[in-house]
View (spheres, rainbow, N blue to C red):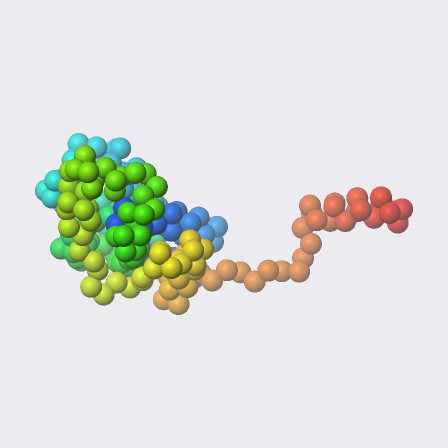
Length: 203
């Protein structure tokens, strides 16, 4: 199957699991011999958008730059996996129009669950007013209206959420299905069998 370029765009609040799901999906696609690129919010902000802050204007510029990169990659046949909070529908809709085969994946998790988890302690600081413009607390997050994929990360394990994404991609023929396992014995397995037989006195 010839690889189709696409942009798989994970959106969701901080701590919703979008990066973890995206990383695992990318690992699986690479294992299936696909051309894959990952664009993650934390990593991109250390390089491509390190000059930007967290005002609405800067958030918009951040997404615009990422969209441009995703546009170049996806139109050249690369599976481009993006994970950004990307809180504003307008910018996500613009990314849909600009990139090839845009797929919106919503890492859905109630705010109260995220506040309770708060692995990085960010929500605690935001609620105290120590972090300004924090999405979901002092800055808005606009839920996707009709995303292609929804992962309910408060109800699903990481593996279950990844399975939801992979199955959708397989059904839409964006990724090849895993090859059937053959019954052929590998060289390593053959050597291990020989050693066992030698220990038992058969060789």
